[in-house]
Amino acid sequence: MLLLKSFQKNMCRNRSIALLVLTCIAFGKDVAAAEWALKGSLEQGLQYNDNIAFSSIQKDSVVGYLLKPSLEATRKTGVLDLGFEGQGDIRRYDNSHWDCDNYKLSSNNGYHTNRSVFNLDGGYSASCSYAQQIEDTGLLTPNNQSKSYYVAPSWTWQWTPRDQLVLNTSYSKTSYSNPVGGVASIDGLNFRGNETYKVSLGGSHEWNQRLSLNEKLLFSDIQYTGSNTSAQNLFGFQLGANYEINHLWSASVSGGPLWVDSQQDSNGATDGQNSSSSLGSVADISLKYKDELTQFSAGFTNSVGPSAIGQTLQTSSIFANYSYRLTQHLLLDLRSNYRRSESFNNISASQFNRNYYTVIPGVAWELAKDWQLKGSYAYSSQDFQQDNNDFQNLTDGSMDSNAVMFSLGYSWDGVRISR
Image (cartoon, rainbow, N blue to C red; front, top):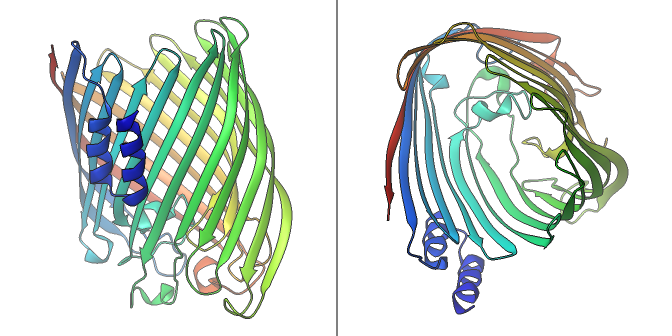
């Protein structure tokens, strides 16, 4: 109990990921049986993209070299699970505007008792922001860095042999270093960071061996940074079910309403605020199939979350993924995704709507144990639908890009030590 109080006190004082890992290690009670594991991977590749800026005005075609190392360390005992992972994504192009360094450190830790599981996850990442804007805003700009970190404690209580109670909380912060200059067509584009607090209380019931039901109450508070700041409070609930159809097929469905209360400074923090309320929804529907040769998944998601333009967006997505093992060492893979993003309220001068579509066929060849050679082609297209003049020079008409990539990857099984 004293260790737990000390851990909580340290967490409040310092959000540093380094301290997070150290306190997680101190949290655990050592036992006789423990297992240490260390593994990693390294992937390097060549890429060609005919429109890396994803712009209809200034198209930059580039050739680049990509390097993606990763390392994972874990320690497991009867009551304590510790995990640490580091990832890198380093990109160098013939046009140095688009050089990119992405780094991510994360820690996943769990403490088990007879009826409870306490988890503490955390992470820190630093990257060139254009690497994440395809999924976020669709507005890509070089010479812009982003930093983010998060802390997410949770508690799961095994109420009865078939019932669980789950409490999840999280804090995250994202910031951008907007460039002084850049590509001419996107000068003046300023991304806005945010601080987000989330809490949810839910439960699950195992109806039988094939069907489980779940429910959740959730709340989020999103505070954006910068001038003319905005804030959103999100309230909602979800109901869902997971069903094992047979040994090959499985399905899951969840969804519910979400109320969004928004406030935005009209002319600065002291000149008054505009406020509005709206009703949205969250949903997650998926269907999966897996046999010895084939894997297939398809589904629909509807989510609400912050974006880099200072607006909370509602994003609907339809996806389908398919892979088939042609031979023992040759794998065919096909991924496709359609996304529709919309601003939640018409209270921001940055309001915009966007359609985005991508399809990626590829082939992977297992050269030898732990070695894999991959080739893929990606076609992407997006279309902005604005009802104001913001970013108009960036978003007139439809934009698309074609990319080809070849990569060679090595996966290291690592070492395991048991005692």
